[in-house]
Every structure is written in structure tokens, then in C-alpha cells.
Amino acid sequence: MSTTPSSLVHIVGGGPGAPDLLTLRAARLIESAEVLVWTDSLLSPQIAALAPPTCERIRTSTLTLEEVLAVVVDRARAGLRVVRLHDGDPCLYGALNEQICRLADAGIGVEVVPGLSAYQATAAALQSELTIPGLVQTIVLSRAGGRTGTPERESLERLASLQASLCLYLSARHVEEVQTELLRHYPPQTPVAIGYRVSWPDQWITVVPLEKMAATSRERDLIRTTLYVVSPALAAPEAARSRLYSASHNHLFRGGIDDGDPVQPSP
Image (cartoon, rainbow, N blue to C red):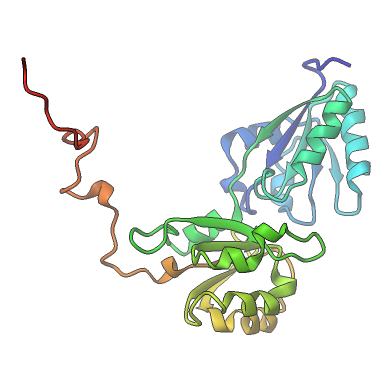
């Protein structure tokens, strides 16, 4: 079956929770949706409320992926404007690939709209940069193995050995084993930001030493909607700065670029 303009599904990232952290494109699509298929267990009702009163709202917390897609396909084939609304960014732990493949098999096109992720909202709430010159220049997004598991080449041990800014999703249920593994590579005093329901009205964020990561999580009874950001950048020295804005650094828009090649004399 060929894809037509009437058989197009919008897979939209709803961001971390606050409605005003939606992208403009996401907000406009939600506001014009005729069918909203939304992750009600992870998304704020305030975001779903942006859809028109006449919009059909379908909650997915009790549905399997097959049941969700059956509804999406049915409504899209009926020519309705379908918005499949994910929490955060649909490209990150959002079962995006499975949905696109099955919709393609049904002859339905897809537009994917990115959303702000919780690690970005957490860093912003802490007014912290996760890439500090001379300290850390890499951000790793991952998760504890859990039931889904991770490839051996992406084991937590290997990721932790980088000592980069490590952002762990879906890991609160396994926090003791996560902490034990991280302590093999990061110093015990490495700062860890623990973010719960980041950007929601009941947001809770704290920064603790790595050695207290598990105890703090258990004290708060955190098992879901929790993000860990493990990074030496959270305790960066005030003297650290980027060379890009240094007066001694020339570049294309400020003084030209010295490429190191000697000037050839004129013949």
C-alpha cells in the first residue's frame, strides 16, 4: 500500500514534563490533533490537555505495543490526524524503531518530532554544564541492564571506565548494583545528580556523592521516573573555561584561523 498524506502519523516527543518545555512544533501538532495516543503513565496531563476538546484521547499505560499500533493504524487509515505522544525524546528508549517498522508495513508514513530529554532538563535545573574543558568532554546516555539487558560491549563497567558524564535512565530499581559498579571507576566523592520527575510540579533534584547514591534513592523510595547524572563536571572548578571564547583563541569569525601551514613565497 502506498503512503498518502492522509496516512501519516506524527510521533512526538513531549519532553520531560513541563508543558512549556515542548518544542513549538510539538505543541502545534498536539493542539491540532484529532487523535492523541499518549503515554499517560509518564506524561503530564497538562500536555494532553493541549489537544482540542473534540480530540479522541487514548491512554497507553495498560496497552501492549500491538494494541497501541492497532489503534494508530485504524485511525490513520480513517484519515484522522494522529499524534503518538511520547515522554522525553522518542529517539531515546521510546520503542521508536518497532513503531516505524510496523507502520511502514501498514503503508503509513511517519514524522518524528524530537523532544527535550530529562538529562538536559536536569543539567539546566542545576545550572550545570556537562562538558567542561580539561575535565570531561563526553556525555554517555545509557541504562542499567535490567530485564531488557544491554550488549556486552556497552556494559556499565565499560561505560564507567570512561569517567565521562554518565546519564543513566531506567536504573533506579537496580541502584545498588549500579553504585557498586560505578565505584570501581569513579572516585567515591564524584557528584551524582538524582532527578525525580524533572520539570514536573513535584520535581525533586539533589546532588550527592556517588557513595551515597543508592542510600539516597532508597530513602526517597525512587523506583521510576528517575534519572542519574554521574559527572565530575557537577563539581567543576571555577577556573575551567572554554578556549572558544578566550581572547587568545582565533577562529573563522574572530581573527581568522591559523592552520599551521607555512606561507609560500611568491615566485
